[in-house]
Image (cartoon, rainbow, N blue to C red; front, side):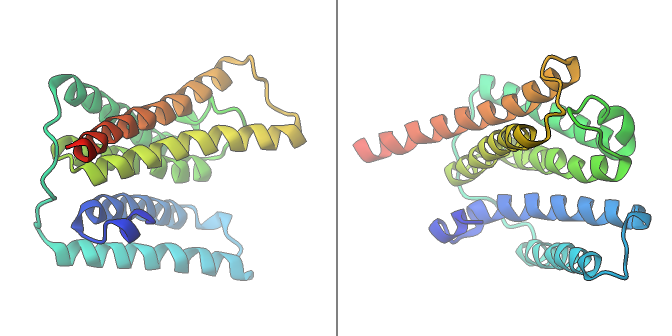
Amino acid sequence: MAALLVWNRWSPGRLVLVMAFIFTVIVSAASFINLGYFNFERKAPWLWFLVYLASVAVSGLFLLRAGGRPSAKGVTLNSAWRGYMSMEMAILGLYGVGLLLFPLTFGGFWPWPIDAFHAQVYSAIFLAGAGGTYLVWKSAPHEELLVLGLAQFLVGLFAILGLVITEAVMHRIDWTATGTLCWLALFGWIGISGIFKLYAVSRYFSAQSAS
């Protein structure tokens, strides 16, 4: 969202709104499916639904108003980049769908035990990422490539950092377990993929400054 303060136009707004819409729709749907997890005698559940449903409405409204507006002119991705982003989109999308439809199976290897509700909520991270990757794969404005790269880098970094900080207090993670190593590899790959996108954009802006 901070990127919109720098580029206050449809690109990267398109990417931000699409990813936000996917994320909040999935979290809202998972919440309605799992209403038994909420204690509506407390204020927190009402605020939870208010925040997410309001976000769905706002992002959905702006996407509807934008209609079929095209993205800004972008770079032409070479075959290697297009092939890689197709693979990235497929992995994120399939894993996100797996968490959504078969939460206990696809969330079973995580370093800490997660129930069906939380696995379905976490699926929003991967499906939003797949949606953003698809938009950039289809048309890659530099601003959107930068925002997607930054988002992936931060997701990978803070997911792993959050695990390390929590484990420093809880001491419950088996760092040598296959599931833990797979989880670290998954989020490490997401973060590194973001770094490569940021590097590609930085090369473009450096060339523009030089010219």
